[in-house]
Each structure stands twice: as C-alpha cells, then as structure tokens.
Length: 113
Length: 116
Image (cartoon, rainbow over all chains, first blue to last red; front, side):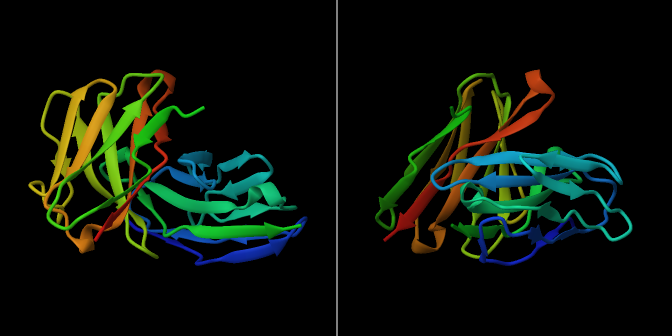
C-alpha cells in the first residue's frame, strides 16, 4: 500500500547550517507530495507541495523536488534559523484521494544559535 | 490565527471512561474532515473520514464502535473515544479541506490523550 519513509531524527543543527531531510514514497500512481511543519503547540501547516514529476515546491527558503525516478521528495534549506525548529512531516496523497494523506513519521529539527 | 481548532489539546481520563475531542473549522464550511492518530515514533495514520450529515468512513482496522465520529454541522466534527484503555493513549489530530480555496488542507493543533 501507500507509504512514506522519512529520515528519522532528531536532527540538531547550528544556525546557518545546511539542512536535508530525506523522504521517499511508494510509487503507486502519481501522488501529490507535501511537506508539513508543526511548530511547538500548533497544528500542522503546509510548508510546500509538488503535484507532478520534476515540480519544485518552495517556501520560506525550503525547497523540495518531486523526483519520480528515485521516488523521493527531499526537503532542503541552505541556511537554517532558530525559528525553523519544529517537526517536519513528509506526506503523499493516498490512492483514495489527495485529501487523505499518508505521512512519514516526522523529523524533529532543533536549530541552536 | 488558527483556521481549524481542536479541543482539548491535552486530556487525561480514567480507564473505562469516554472522552470527546472536537474539531472545528473556523473560517470555512467543511463537509468532510479527517481524523488521524499517531503512536510514539510512528507515522500519523488516518483513522476515518468524517462526513457531514452521514456516517463516517473508517479505515481498515479502526473500530467504529470504539471511535465514534459525529459530524453534526458544517463546522464541527467530534471524535469520542469510548471505554478508553491505556493503549488508546495517543496523539489525535484532525484535518479539513477548504474547498473554497482549492482544497487547501488545514490541520488542527492536535490532542494528546492519556488514559490512566
């Protein structure tokens, strides 16, 4: 069935470091792919998305490219900030529809000053 | 501010009791909402689809008599964990697509349930 495999954390970085969080998905169909972020005490917020192969989603300095050949959607940011500390979830639309999401386990990121 | 609000954010209940979690869409009407739960170090797993005015659709393996879902209005879905047991302790979170903005999916803040 549908699944998403996400790099396990926690990840601890210094400010201005480069961030990569790996994410791969099962290749059933051509799902939309998402990255969600959850800041402490808040709900999940959509960070970025891509709906077809080779699309690049970007927001707040974060980027992820839909790679069909490697079934990946890795999240990257060139220079993280303390305010980026959060839990990041990779997700794909399910076969039941893009409103139903299949999530990875989440990766907790802590950025130290 | 929050577009989907979930309440309570944390709840502790005794074994055998029932607990209700609410999910409200604040700025839009949601004919459909989704309920997820997350066990420690596991993915968020879809439990059920809540449909306004009709029965919820449960995912395979989810006990519908244990996790009662009521979607009585266009802005409110409730999840009631009945006869709770410690193994029901988990993080529960709801989502709602706003079909007026191209199906943008908004999530609630989530609810931590601890059954003692």
